Image 1 (cartoon, rainbow, N blue to C red):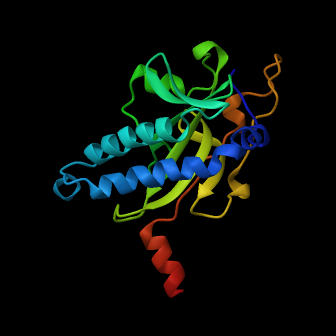
Image 2 (image 1 turned 90 degrees about the vertical axis):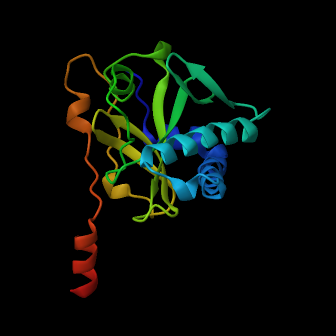
Length: 200
């Protein structure tokens, strides 16, 4: 299984964490400056435009930088860190899960029981917008398993969520470290819960 601990991931991406934030922030700024932004009819159109700009920015920022580059694997284009970490960039929903139409490829990417891309570790760089979609609220690097988060590293926005992190245990062949038994489901407060806190 393409498993990595949070500590190992932090060490691998630490030299590039500021660039990851720049990639997302600049992509969303590009969207806001786009003449089509004011005529947006569907949120998926915005997500596609931002996704395109994230890839374009990543190519520009990491051009000729050692140890990282934009690369393609079957059915995906993303960021290759070293030789063994592949990061795709996506918009996140209210649970910090990447938004995908559930194709076979999309489901396979987040299923850590599936071996893909010759054993590359699969991570996601996701962004979350504020409630009105006017600004980037959070940028997070995470490892996901199906519909849950294994661990996450906050790069921008909220303070690090150490209480919501549960790294994978080393894989054993005795079946005692099932991936499904080592995952958590993050919860984001709803607007009503926020109001209750502020008025309580």
